Image (cartoon, rainbow, N blue to C red; front, top):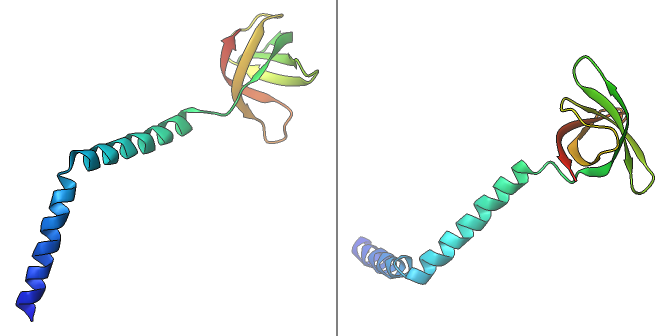
Length: 112
């Protein structure tokens, strides 16, 4: 009884070994691994979409710059950035909103 189970196990392993050695199987597994790993990398780098607008009401503070970002939809967002910006610049800012939603902490500024 034990011997017949061993032969069955050996036959299954031999047939599986043929699948693993197939170049198309390996190609599919490699492609799946690359797609999966790239999705994790892009999610960790992306902070979400930024806010596009024009810089106005610029004030320099002790630790950076506070300004109002006027968006094309007519909205205004108060922002804080360590990087210098000039009044009247068209920029895209990325970052995070404060807990109370009153100020947007800018992590990156892209000049448009």
